[in-house]
Structure formats: structure tokens, C-alpha cells
Image (cartoon, rainbow, N blue to C red; front, side, top):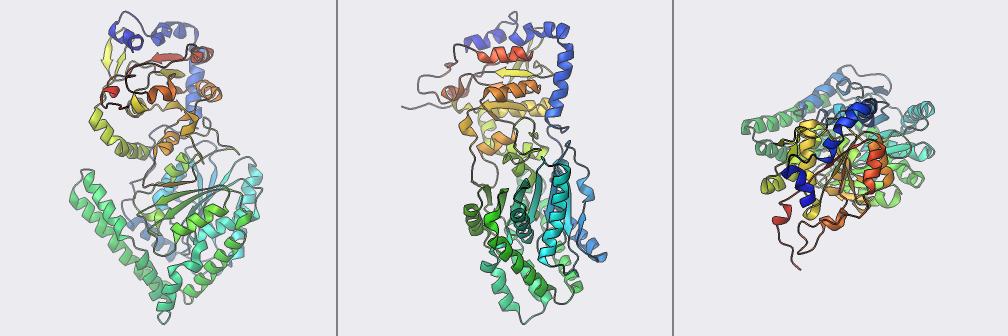
Amino acid sequence: MATLSLSLAHPQVLPLWQQGLRQRRLHGSSRHAHAAGRVQASYRGLEPLYDDGYGTVKDLGHYYRAIGELVEHDGGPPRWLCPVDAGEPAVEDAPVMLYLPGIDGMGMGLCMHHKALGTIFELRCMHIPRRDRTPFEELVTMVEDVVRAEHSASPTKPIYILGNSFGGCIALAVAARNPGTDLVLVLVNPATSFERSRIKTLLSVFSPLSDRACIAAAALLNYNIHNEVNMALSIMKSGRHPLEALSRLTSNMSSSLKHSKMLDKLPKDTLKWKIKLIKQAASYANSHIQSVTAEVLLLASCADRLLPSKSEANKLQKKLPKCRVFFFEKHGHSLLLEHGVHVSSIIKCSSLYRHSRRYHRVRDYIPPSATDMKEADKISRGTMLKTCPAMYSTMEDGAVVRGLAGLPEEGPVLLVGNHMLMGTEIIPLGAELMRRRKVVVRGVAHPLLFPRKARTRSQGHDLFDLLNLWGGVPMTYRCMYELLAAGEFVLLYPGGYREALHCKGEEHRLFWPDQAEFVRMAAQFDATIVPFGVVGEDDLVNVSH
């Protein structure tokens, strides 16, 4: 610690990064400009803390109004819609995402995610008019035509298919019939479990009634009042007025009642056709699932009262070779319309967002959004309140100031410091740089912290997800080389996990290697080396034998 804190205690001794600053300004201006350009290129034109649109859709009224407009001007064959509120992708060379709706066929189930997904994908939504009677096989062919056209235009780019319930069966069918195409499937409560669902029981009970009564009963069963109450409580916990929470809760309930009036416009025999369609879809998907070789991200609601989505997720995971499951403990069947679900963040932290056949941690990385920052603040709030971290940096004239104003403005930068107990100092350091400078600190960590997890049972993100979301990379020379070449801010702990998991009596000790190879690599890219020291964290707890 003494060697690291020397430059802070004695202003006349300049830190390493300041000693080379003048030389870099005289001799490295062209390289600096090149490096600064590469920082932007590594994020493909997207700035950290970008607006992902989550929270702009305040209630379900927006969804029901959109459906009402589609119903008023409905007719013709199935088609593809490009949501206006999604806008154009902010990411350069964004991949295509096809949204396949549930059995309603409206194609507006992603309305709360339009901007978030439209920022990083070229988003297209399938719309099936109410009076349309296109068979299941033709719907699959319709999706296949787009998949093959996109694959022909960009053979090395993946094609994303987000299938919701019934749409999940179509997505599996397309993947089974096109094993040579690079597809990434995002399945939300897929209807492959229809034969074991409560819908069949519901139909037998309400069969003497009209189609409208059956559909209304299913909609009522699907309504998740638990999620609505949780949403209202989260609004009050955030410090906003309780009346705002009550207004949003009643607005969602009244919107659902208004939606029931649209049932009067349903054509006759709609329910029979929908049931026939979903039976065919589930049967085909289940019989061909062994042919699916695509990567699959399965989002399963544990509180789904229409389909046994939780048990079906376990079943599908055993059959699909490249499947990861993300469980939602308190959410219902309409997962995409419920509060607190951020599909774009889940895709990013699952390392599934890519522009070529293989995921690249530098070229394919997308920085955290404003919503990601809020979610991280919720997770780290307790740690921040208990530790109250304070940060100081040294300016060019040797003055020590509070904050990180003394850090270089441009990359590449190599931050080299010491781990305290469990390495929790990473949280405030990364958050402060993100807020004040809009800089993503790309932490280099032990490869064991990047497992290929098969499932996550969580309402939010765990440590491993956050590492991916916030730019962590495994400790390899290749990763460091590519990060510095891209002009990134790289965070390195030479002491590694041994320093973070030190034993009793080893407080404040350094476990650094004798030869600092990172200095040579940093010099190769003319990177600024910023040494820093951390104190206080080891004094919070006592390590027993």
C-alpha cells in the first residue's frame, strides 16, 4: 500500500501516468486520436447510459390503444410491422430480430420493449389479422422466407427470433427446418406444453358458453394482480407520491376492462381456429425439437397460470443442447407486458448479442443503459450505504482533489490497483466512472467468474450476469491486447483472486508478481498507466481462522 499511495501523499512525486503525459502530447497526438476513435467503434456507435426507453410506457393503456388501432384497420394476410416507437437501430450493422406473437397474433406484445430492442436490433413484428385463417405451415414458411433472405444477404450475421407463447412454437419449427442458419432464439413461455395446460380444462368448463366468454375467462386468469401490486410498491419505495402508484394500478385495471369490449368484434369460430392452430404448432415443435441446434434463451414465468412454463422450461432445457433458462419467480404468462422485465438487458448479460458467428467480448460489447445503471444501484445500495466510499485523484499540477477529475480523458488507459477483501471496491469505482465520465471500466477477472450457466433463478441479475453486463473479460493476454488496441479503460488487479481472498493477518498485503508484464503491453499501445490504492475495506470485517 505504501508504494501505491506515495504519489498521493507527496504531490511532488508525479504518478506514472502524469510523467508520460507531456511526452504523449508531443509525440502521440495522432495515435491518441486513433485510439479515441476506436473507443467509440468498440461500442458500435452507442454511448454508455443510453436511453433504452424502459419506463416511458407507464401503463398497459399504451398496449391496448395500439391493439385498438390495429383492430380498426384490420384485414388482409399476415404481414410484418416495423414499430414506429422502436426507431432506427443506434448500433452500427445491427442484426435483425423477428418478433413472433402469441395466439392473439396482434404483434404488439413487445410494446414495452420497442425502444430498448429497437436500439440494438432491426426489429420486425409479425401481425396476424383477426379474420385471417393462414395454416401453421404457411406461417412457418413466411418466417423462413425472411430468415433465408437475411441469411443470403449477410451469411455471417446471426438472426434473432423472439417467440412469445404460440410464437415460440413457430420459432422452434423454423430453427428445426434450418439447422445450417445461424439463429438465436429467445423463447418466452413457449406453448409447447399446451397439452398439459390449464387452457384445456378452462375450455371444457366454458364450452357451453360463447367464444367471447371463453377468451374473457382466459384473459382474467392471465391477469397478474401480484405484479401490479409489486409495481405500485416499487414506485412508492423510489420516493414518489403514493397517489402516482395508485393511479398507475387503477389505470392498468381499467385498461383491461376496456380491452374486454374489443371481444364483441371477434369473428365467429375464432376460438376454435386458434385452438386448432396452437395444437398444430405445439405438436410440430415437440416432434422436431431434436433437430434444433440454435442457441436458445428461454424466459420462463414461475407464476404462469395458463401454461406450466416452469416445468416446461426444465423439460426443454434437457432436449435443447444450447439452452439457457432465466426464471421469473413472481411473473405470469404475459411476461413481456409486466413490470420489471428488461429483455434487452437479459440478452446482453447472457453474452448472446453478437454480429458474427461467435461472440466477441470486445467487438460485440454493448455498454450498460440508464436502466441497467438503476438496477445496479438497487443491488449495490446496501454496500454503498455501509461503506460510504470516497475517491481522490491527482491533477496534472499535483493537487489532490476529491473525485476522478484527475484521470485521463481518453483511452487507452490501464488502471492498476490492489484488491481489498472480496474485491467489492470494483462496484463504486465502476459506477463513479460511468456516472461522471460515461466511461465503461473493462475489468479483467479470473476465467472462473465467466461460467457458461445453464439457468438463472432470479428477479434481477447475479454477480456473473453483472460482470458480462458491465464489460468484464476473462484474464487472458488476448483480451487485454484487444481492449488496449480498442482504446478502452482497462482495470487490472495484478494480485488477482489471491489478493481478494486473503487470509487472517494478511490485511493490506500485496500479492503482485515479480515481473509486471502488463507494463510492456501498455507501452506497446502507448496506454496511460494509472496506479491507484484502496484502503478501509479490510477494516470492515475480521477474518477468522
